[in-house]
Length: 401
Image (cartoon, rainbow, N blue to C red):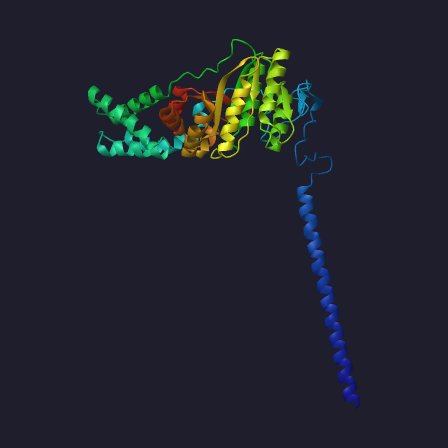
């Protein structure tokens, strides 16, 4: 190889070495860029020195103390703690300890009102009551899940009143509709107490509608009225139900009777009633299983629970069906099934503040003659309130600010 060849080989080696070095430097710079970006992102999410780092999750409450109950080998008595309100509430399970503030139907029923507001505004802006007005009213009622039958009956009654009174103004027509709705919804809503303690209230319904939470909120209300309360964790097929009820009992100062997971619900409720009788408690709030309402075994189980609850001291004065207002007409199907099995005395309508289908209230009372006694208008314990027909209808007809 000549001198020229040697020089060419050396130059080639030099260029390749230089390229390798440049590639290594580029790789190092890219890695440093990634590290810098991670550090910057971390510093943005970390409070400054001396700042307060908030916990990612609220602290869990202390586990309730459990003792064996003498009345049954598989039933335990949960003693409630006296330091109610010292710990933060579990999200979605227990209402916060707040100064009680009665929720407003008008403020909480914005979604339900939205189903009617457009139609009502359009009718108020018209000059006469035409057939189109009646059709728009019927469509709005059906859209809100009042149901075809109840909507037709309601408007037929209003037509007769409008004709006999000679009403020609669309605004006056809406007042007549409002009046008729209130008349059809007014029903006895008082929760009845037994002449002999304890009073027993059974909660029935499918899973997920809020039975356990309703018991907790009712217990909170009753304890606030000075009554002693025993809660029966009769939904033994859902593991979380007993723990959730124990948490509510601890918060509001009620005693909770619970059994083994998968045990006999009737046995748990029998033991709860027996304990309430011996302790002189005023009210037993009993949770029940909530498997699909189409299963005949669940309905038979509910009949058994009712028979057993009535065997001991006191008596069952309320069997309340808990329904999720957001399910609409499906809630009416559930109500029919449970009415046949449990001799219902009333309905608790939960999540009414989050539903656009408030018309289910009319469907239940018109089709089954079962009064809505309580409604849930929010997450806190104080948001479970007695149903007020006039406030409910006024909230649906209220004009937006």
